[in-house]
Structure formats: C-alpha cells, structure tokens
Length: 168
Image (tube, rainbow, N blue to C red; front, top):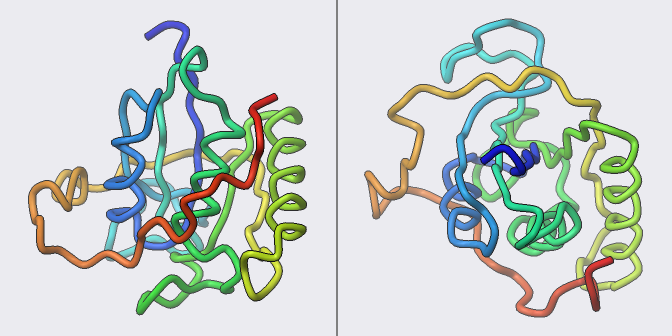
C-alpha cells in the first residue's frame, strides 16, 4: 500500500459514488466522508459547507487520476449546481479536491474535454477546491449500499464511452 495514491471527489450522495467506484480497476479501497466545510469532526446531522465526498485509494500502476476523473464525469451529472437526483444543497455539489498542481491541471483538462464533448446538455459546474481535511463519515454510511442493497442512489453510468481516448 505504500505506493498507492488517494483521490478526493464529491458528486452527490456519497453512497452511490462509493458503490460504483469500488468496482473500478485499480481502486483498492473507498471511504465516504465530508470535505470542504466549516467545522471539524462533521457528522451527517451537522456538516455545514461540507460536501458528501469519497476518498479513493488507488494503485497508480493500474489506473490514474485522469481515468478516475473520466469515470467521475460519466457517473454523475457535473452540470447541475448543488444537486444530484433528488438531493439538493451544497452537500451534493460536484467537486474535485486537488492535492497538488498536477491534479489541478488534470482536473482542468478533463473539464475542458468533457465540455468539448457536447455529451452533457450544459457546461460542467464542478468546483476545483484545494485539498482540505477529509472527515470519515459514520460507520453506518460506509459501504451503505452493500449493507442496504435496495437503498437510494442517483448514480449510474450515463455514458459507456470514455471521454479520453488514451491515458497520458
């Protein structure tokens, strides 16, 4: 695990994102939590300004930050402000929490590629936010859709075809 990397994204309810990402090649572990908000130790009942996000632990020999973002932009609607499905509010915003300038540059490139593709009806509104502490959500939220197979999710793969033609 010493060579594994972490990526931090938010795109609506964290349950659905976790459920889809856990099966992707190179993803070794997932945690759901809160990021980008105003308080320390946020909870499901009190997380002002925090997005419901996900921490992805991945093997960079099997996948890349670019491929993770490609999938991210296909499994949620990045053109809706503070909303995914029935969930509304800043907790459900689309965001990429970049950890360094390389990740920020890749995120900007991917947003341009997604916008240029014309696959979505609107422009990408995903925010690029500098990394801030990731607070792990309560245990009952971890692996929620495994524990509750009929639970709510608004996430699904909207486009089979990748936005990127090859990984750089």
